[in-house]
Each structure stands twice: as structure tokens, then as C-alpha cells.
Image (spheres, rainbow, N blue to C red):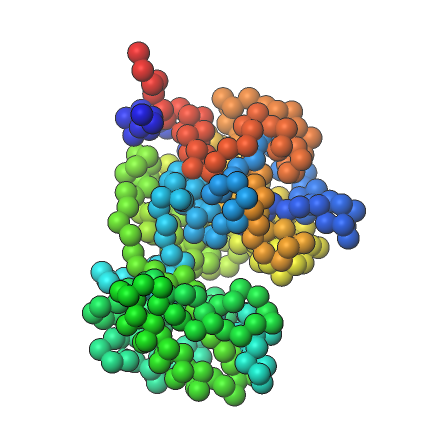
Length: 402
């Protein structure tokens, strides 16, 4: 019978910071001396911290499986991503502040660019500005309010992203994504994958037909892609599960969404990592656990921009002393998955992990890199066990057995 961590929990005073550099892991790039982005970056503070910490590699879901952002974070928070599957749409909807009702179907939506033959040539519409996204979503919302007996709710996110929610009777979420995930293909049709989702599929086809007609003359955002159709699950909240007052510090809506779903407090925050670290300082006295999310490493990896991802890692490194100055009892630096710029997207490669605490010991590593982490004390482990290591080093777990 598996160990029930909840039965071992005990009170503690030590504060915990989980710093997630989204997609930080990489693979050796032949065009950059066979180095990964972490190896190419100049990171004196992370490297000094690595010499005082234990390292390892973390498998987000299971071996060889490329995770989405949702499963990646489910594992980080100590839940099994194979058992608890949460669609991207729900996370995005919560992230932009929508309150979902029972039966709602949510989807992540992208503006995209297609050519005259209907082939997608840019899945992100040139990363249009957030202001442009707000204009387009406002126009669509005004023109498409209801389809049959279903309310259509649209809300803008960052840049090219927005959220679609369908609210009405008889909806299901088993619908094929319309996003082909690659340029050079036409968008797919929203096909129902089971009988209970046929109404959803029908409503979506009508929505897409109407929306495409409204944006067909836009210079960049002349197409729509939908993915992650989902309905809200019922789950045990993170603060109750671990007995921790928990704060999520994130800029992007999707990560605010997953944190809200798991019961984290989530301040309304804009800016970049500098603003996030300031928020960490301001809230230090009020919480036990801080989830601090940094997005830019992932964006650069998805764009295939090795040099920019290196600079993002170097920017992150600048804030390590400020975080350490708060004297956390446990500091973990890792990613929710790897996003090698060589692959232009998420990958199955394990995420590098650094864990610092006065009780963790030290691997005496030279640097915080994938190769150094491969040799570390933590070994390679499933992400859903990271919280075990964190709680143990925060002295928040009692002894198991007599």
C-alpha cells in the first residue's frame, strides 16, 4: 500500500520556493558547439548554488512522453498526471479569470495566419500584440453571442491567445483539436470523439464558420485554432493536501489558471520576472509555499531561438541572490518540461532539478546543467515525487512506521 503523505505531515516554519523556469531543459545543439542552452549560458549564481545543492533529473509524466504544460505542472505539485488529466482549455479559462460552471466546455484559442489556400503558415499570427488580440476578441464577442441554446463566451489572453467557453445544456468535451500543431497544414475540423460531444462539435463548426468570415481580411490574424477542449475536474486542493499556505506568482494566464484550480492564491500581476520577485518579497511573511513561474525560457525554445533562450536563462540567474536573501528553507529550481530550441517545442527529455536546503547535502557540482544533473544525488525520478523531497527538506514530514 503506498505511503500516505497526508498522514505524515507536521507543522513547520521553513518556507519553500519552487522556481519553475518553463521549458528550461535542452539538448546539445550542433550549431552551438554541441552545448545545451544551460551549458552555453553564463550563470554564476545558479552555478554557485549548484555547488551547495543536490541535483537530479525529473521525468514530467513517464519515459519518452512529451508533456503539455498542464501535465507538467500537475506532476510538480505532487499529483499523478496520468491519473489526473486536466484539459488546457480549463486552465486557460481560469487563468484569464473566468469562473466555470458545471457543464461548461472551455478551449484554448489562438489567432493564426493562413494563406489563400487555407494552409496555416503561422500558428501564432506573428505573436500579435495583446491590444490587437483584445480588439479582435471584442469584435467576435459582439457578433457571436449565442449559437442555438449555447452561450459563447470569449476572453482575450496574452498576445495571440484567447479563451473560448461554451455554456449550455448537453455539451461534452471529447472533441478533436482543430490545431494541427505545425505550420504547413490546414486546420482540422472539430470532430466529436464520442456521441456525448456531438452537440459541442456542431456548435464549434458554426462558431468557426462565423468567426472565420469576420476575420478573413485581417493581415495576420485571419484564422483560428482551438485545442484543449475540457471541463473542470474535482480534485483535492494543494493547500489542504500539504498543509501549506500557498501563493502562485505568474504572469501568463495559463499558469495562473492551473494554480487557481489547485487552490493557490494568485495575485493579479503584470510585468516580468523582476515584478514577480518583488511580489515574492512583499508576500514572504504571509505564505509557506511559493510557486514562482518564469515563462520566457519556454517561449524562446518554442521559437527555436537558442541565443534568446540563453539570454533568458542569464536573466533568471540575476535574481537568484535576491531569492536567497529571503532565506528560504527549501529552494528548488527546475522546469515543468524541456523545450529544446533544436526541436522548436516541448520534448520528452527530463527536466534538470536543483534542490537547496541546509539538510539536502551537496553534490559539489560545477554547474547547473543537464549533464551535471545527470550525475546528481537525486537521480532521475518522476515529477510527482518532487513534493516528497521538498517536504522532507522543509522538515514537514514525520516518520513512517514504528
